[in-house]
Length: 91
Image (cartoon, rainbow, N blue to C red; front, top):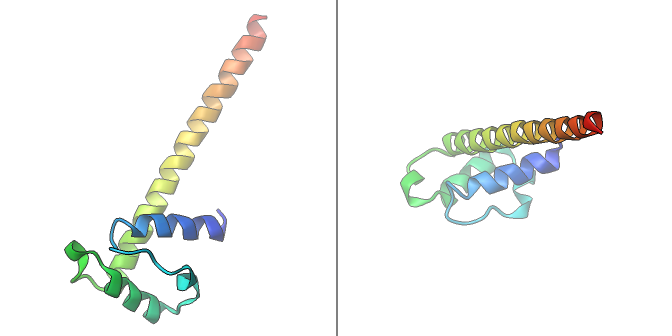
């Protein structure tokens, strides 16, 4: 998967844990600064979490959802092509 897609997935997933969006420059932050930023932006239910724990949770959600999307996409593509092949064979 591309780094850009991974970053977009992370940004999407962060909205479940942060009260505001990350700046677009978040990808340039070193680990310490990123963890501090995550702690600063933590939504109230997560305000006592460490930046590292927030990062892990956000990353986990992002990768889990991307994995689900890819799995569903494969199922849909396979189903689509199987229908096409069946149609061809019936003709």
